[in-house]
Amino acid sequence: MAARTPVDSDLFWHLAAGEQTLQTGHPALSDTFSYTRAGAAWINHSWLGEVVLAWTYRVGGWVGLSFLVAFLAAFSLLMVYWMMSGPPLWRAFLIVLIAAVSAPVWSPRPQLFTLICLAMAWSLVRKFRGAVEKRLFLLPLLFMGWSNLHGGYSLGFILLGCQILGMGFDLFLRRQDAPSLRSIRQWSLWSAVSGLAVLINPNGLNTWKIPFQTVGVQVLQQAIPEWASPDFHATFQQPFLLMLAGLLLAFGLSGRRVEGGGLAVTVAFTTLALMARRNFGPFAIVTGPLLAEYGWLVLERLEAEGSPFLKRLANLRGTGETARPRLILDASILGMLALACLAKGFAVSQPEQMTRALQAAYPVKAVAWIRENQPPGRLFNEYAWGGYIIWALPEYPVFVDGRTDLYGDEIIGEWLQVVNQEKGWMDLVERYQIRLMLISADSQLTFHLKNCGWRLAYQDDVASVLVRQEQGFR
Image (cartoon, rainbow, N blue to C red; front, side):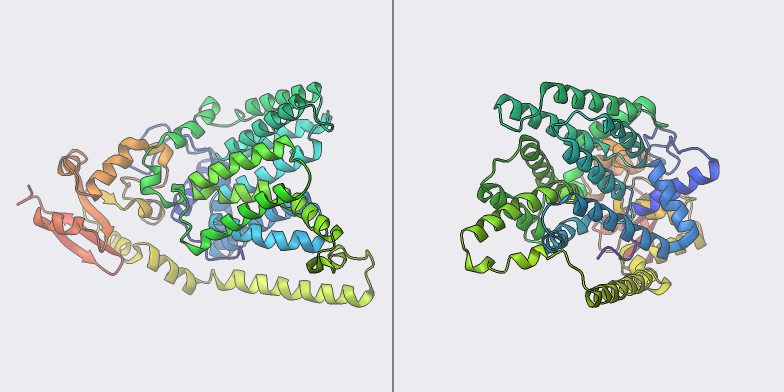
């Protein structure tokens, strides 16, 4: 499922930044890709993840990136599988559902490292919850690596905060299995140490600005689809509803009181997923083990009550015996699946497939025209194409790209002002001395620019290139 054509609007600027780090030997911490933020400090929270992507592309090209995405996505689900309770077939059934929920965020970007690190943090929480454990020193080590791979480490602190809050809630209610006050203090201490470990990072203290800068960009939900709230009319977003409904039913019918940490995590990550669909993956990672645990309790309860539908439930548990013919069959199936994975991984990343995918989503031919003709002046570009232009046309700095935390409301708002031809948009064109436009072929901006003395120099089904003619411009 995760082996797919490695195309994503943010992939390209991640590749460019990672390649710059490989060439210079130090992370890119100031902007060199745009003219709107040229020279400004850039909190590059994914510098190490970018290095992994760039090195993979160097060594394996598009095929390497395709297999990297597949491996990271599958490994995150393997971590979830290890955390689950219940027999293998039950867990395997739920893994398919979790994969369907997570699949929209499986793209060649550093955020895949967040899925793995979140699963690791959750496995530590579930293994040692309520216990006084010396092995909690692993938490700071995990967060130190996480903060260099991707800025999603903030989800880990939400996870730890929910766990501590849930432990305190259980202690307050004096539940039989409630943790001790000493255990809560220990979890709080190691969480604080993990917060300090995050600072072992080229960005230093600025690392902690990332979560607040990103959330503080008000136009995210308006201009960027992955930050928008879910649209459940879209089929690919409906598995989230199915999983959430199953989780709530499992909590209600299991016959066991939900422990405080699990309840707090469910509320927090459900809220995050309902605010932005990019959080579907983290939601699936943390609630999957809970659905397995409480869902299996429901099935056992129904079996005990004599439900005809579950008379064969024992078959799911297995006998623990493995005959030689079964091992041969399992090995054969595994071999066929491995071959299918290899075949798909190569098929979706062949040059012909990549060319079709890139030409369908990005201004490949328009960029080639600009590279050949070299029209002078600053370039104004579509937001979704900024990363591709950084990678494919580095000699032309962009107006904006996917680094929302760098541009903030100011620049993204100005980009929207020009794109929507809002009051004062011509003044912005003048102020930034824009002489070249690379915009969508169906953009209404083309009509207005032609009326203002701009010349349509190139156009295809995807993009239009307009060049400013000084005479007659008004």
